[in-house]
Length: 594
Ligand SMILES: Nc1ncnc2c1ncn2[C@@H]1O[C@H](COP(=O)(O)OP(=O)(O)OP(=O)(O)O)[C@@H](O)[C@H]1O
Image: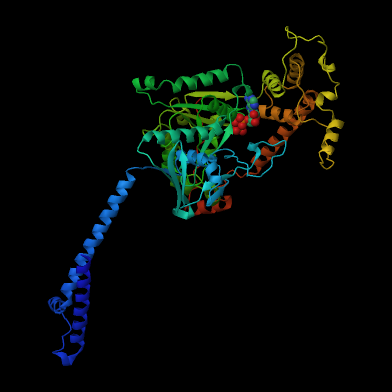
């Protein structure tokens, strides 16, 4: 075959040379006329004796190349048949599991071509790793370290052995729209047994989840309205939230019951969705409760921000359709979206009614009907819990808060005396009583801190202040702008704590201040419970003054806002006179029937 090809090439070249000579040498014969139409072009081409050889060459070359490709594809298919290839795309959660797992493999700290990364792959702190040789201070743990990971570089394959199987990891990256990059990880395993893939995935998932065991993953929508894991928050114990008795239990039982009743919903043809509307004063624990429920039921939180730039009805619908089952969709301050212009009208119509200023402020294009159909339209995701919070219950459209969309409405008010007392007790640690009866010998007045082993001043510190100062200096710390307050609160005996909590509750007016405000006050005296009680009355007065000042400012602002802000009054009058334009219609206030 090869000799034949060489012969054909030689023939073809000789023939071409001869033909070119004949064509260009008038003495060698009659000059060949230049072709003027298609048939003369063919005649011209066929007059080259070398053309046959070129065709032969083309066919033989094509046959050789086809044969080569066939052999190589057979070879690769044969080799591939011994491997499993697993592909992970970075939009997928399994990609994050694998990256954290790879970062945990010691192999990659030794490879010669590696990438150092501080990415966290949706983990709150990322896979914290000590840089070899890095020293930890006494007070530090590995978790305090900057997350840093050793990973295989892009487009370089790295081999490693996992559970006795040879594996090769290859990362690649490609540019997609607007400078965004998409990353792929390919793992090839020298095995035909899928068990090893399952083991690898399980291992990676466990590694990932062990980092997140005590955390609640939080997802938000990216610029292209795809969900991505933005991080996680520590699980909040239910006990840390103080609400009127029964509220928490009712809510958590309802959510649990819902999650286990899919068949019940299906049998009755009721959409398997549940909505909760938590409303009430700011800082009363609405968001905190949702986070606690997510932690207690092991659900991920998907935050839907209706005011998000670029969000419109169809992207909102897509986002809600893509929610996984058994998750929490959280819409915070759902009323805020209204003030940005959500109405039942089409957004374009709303825009035309707005002045230029409000157009600039307008970021979200979600309409109320878009929101309603996203929540419970045909395509809306089933098996999810929707939590919406608002401070302005009466501003909500009744269609939004009707059962089926918001099945349970729970009110959160200002702190009661009972809540103040409970908050205090949860804020400061208590130790169990040494006597079986629960009472200690010195059961005196709490002002004297009965039974307390230290003096009143010592109460603030397990290590007395001068000793602390000496310790700091001994450690070589520069003389500090030293605060004599201790870092940790004393461990109060239960009856001391109860007595302080009662005194605190007595100083707090019923249903006047928010729980957040009370928490703020206790934070100021984080390690000084007695002072927190002593200064409670002063705090209440300050808080009243602060609220009064805010209300005064609000009232002044309202007075200064013109009643017809859309078009200047003078201009309206002028235009009305000319009968060119009626004043823009005022939006009917949306009042919810509650
Ligand atoms: N009932 C409560 N029990 C314990 N802590 C509370 C309670 N209410 C509020 N807090 C504390 O106050 C802070 C604010 O609470 P949170 O954000 O849950 O309030 P919210 O009602 O969602 O407020 P907003 O309506 O302004 O969003 C949190 O740090 C929380 O710990």
